[in-house]
Image (cartoon, rainbow, N blue to C red; front, side):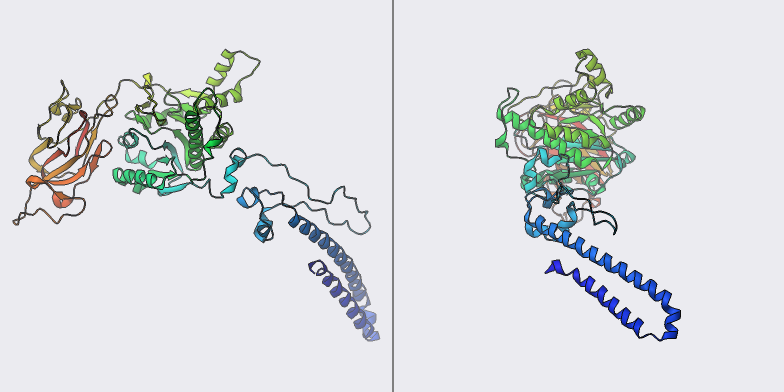
Length: 561
């Protein structure tokens, strides 16, 4: 029925011609003599329109024939990367205008104008377009789930256009998490301007929604201002992003669990790079168990400015593995695609070296020539700005005692200018690592195994107003010697006549001797603000709530006034 609809146009044109002839025949003789040239020209135009109408009818018939053939053919040629055209076709979708607009169909050219010969067609069926392989070519399982490449943003304000984006992939570890310590190390020394020019993206490379939520909650609790400002983002992947690991084979002499671990790491790094490519100018790859040197941001940006015009692929701010590698974000698609192409074959740092080889090495030259050429694509900053601190690898059972010797002397404590206070403690310190030296910023406190009821007390000669506090436990040398189940409490200097300090809410609870609990250690860190209703305070203390199994290190004490 549809094929004959275009003939309606021809009928209308013929009807118009008949009406025109009748109109001409009824025109008076005198008027016809003067109007004849115009009528003749109109008649010629109508004859041309009739010919064009016939041609349009024929062309529409050909097109409808091809469309009907196409609906019976399950292999349309599509230029769109959408799931409708890249996976198994759906006939009902192909019948929709949306599907037709996403697909390019090859049609024969319209018939030539009158007087020109029609060129024979070798094949009237649609021809195929050449297509370049994409990510779904290397990860074909993605075709089954249209949204498998959509990042899920748990925390974030959509920050973009910054000079530097830092990516931190993190996974669930069987032993110990270093994530909070890593983030704190990156952010603690930044100025307000530096925070404005930076975006830190934490990629929780897990598909367990409960675990992802717990990580996000920990980050939000420890870094509320940084999350609110957009400095910190937390994302995670679709559960359909990862392939079926049962399809992996043992390679390089590695057992299957290690092959899976390094394959997943390749996909994790690639996902994070692709997410960051439109967020800023430069991208720095980090891991979730590193610390940064004080002043790292200024040093990094000064070196980047110095090398801005160089023909490098990446800058190195650490010599260990993939830590501290900076790329231009415009190069991230190339790098990520290379990793995805060979994600099952080699570890990530090997693939990065192979990418350099592919770009510059001549197989007819010797190894020394190749090494020189690869060095031209990377620039090394000394000293290193990032150090690996994790002992337990994300691969279960693996210990990593990697240290970057170019990082310099280990930073075992962070000094601050604290208010005058009288110090006392029930803890016994080891050798010269006393509370007094730690409070003055000369050392860290290293205490023997705490037991329930042990405390550290800071008493101020005059009550003070404080904007907040920060206590960091553990350091690079003794990362597991930390305070666990330990609260932070303050003593307000003013007490109502009734004896009750204030109407307590969920974040402030009564403690003995009129102290109020205002925080606690989590993942080795206790920080927060003190309610104005508690100000000024006469004392602050740390109280151990249960027996510990290890010694305890207090590497940073900061009472903000």
